[in-house]
Length: 298
Image 1 (cartoon, one colour):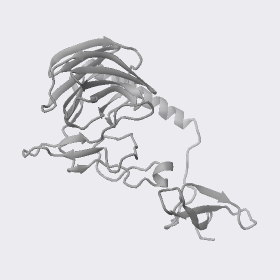
Image 2: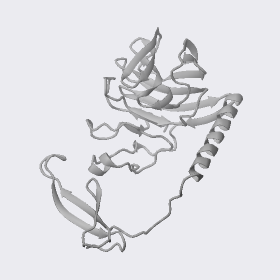
Image 3: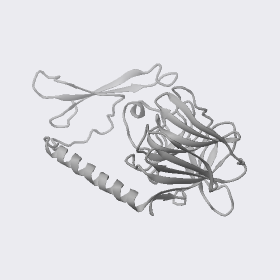
Image 4: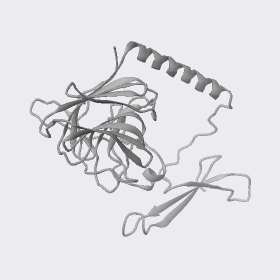
């Protein structure tokens, strides 16, 4: 048995999981990592219907035990994403994922995703109402593959476990079997926490049998070799020139132009001032031209 992931969130400081605090043009048009400790986790959902983070690290008891808490109300709707926090390698195939969690309400799904390749392509094992539900998400289609009556309590911490072997899946709640099913749509993917209602996750563990881990490691090494060989067949990037752009910035895009009647090329930066509300009434307040040859401002 090989443990490929374990987290009890003890390494996290208490507070919000890093998120885009300022929904700016830079954040909308460019990717840049949010500042703060993530511990290998990633929040793929940008939802600015809310202010503040989807996920926080908190310590709900006096014993100092920490958990990752999802605190938004986001029932699944077409073209609306459910809060997700993912981790692992999308090349994982056969494994067992176990989470200890508490769902604060029965009204909507709370649980764990598996064989996750994106927030629009995955399976899910959830608690909802008086049941456990297994979902398959493909693009905008959410299909309930199974619904099984189970006993669970919003005031208690429960253990959800899923074992993936090829197209066969086994589901357990507090070590008791829930159901098994077969589905062949997704044969690989990582794991993710997922809740449409407030929920707390106390630990996450992913294990592989020795043979499963050896197969995964072998396929991953072969894939890395193929990528490296492919890269070597193309011209390699090299640094042309390096200079500071100071505080010029760019509202959304950088433009280029020959501005002096010569072959000298310039960067054109447009800066803006916002007026009234969000991005609805901004105007260009400054244009800066910087030589791509010397870095000097024209």
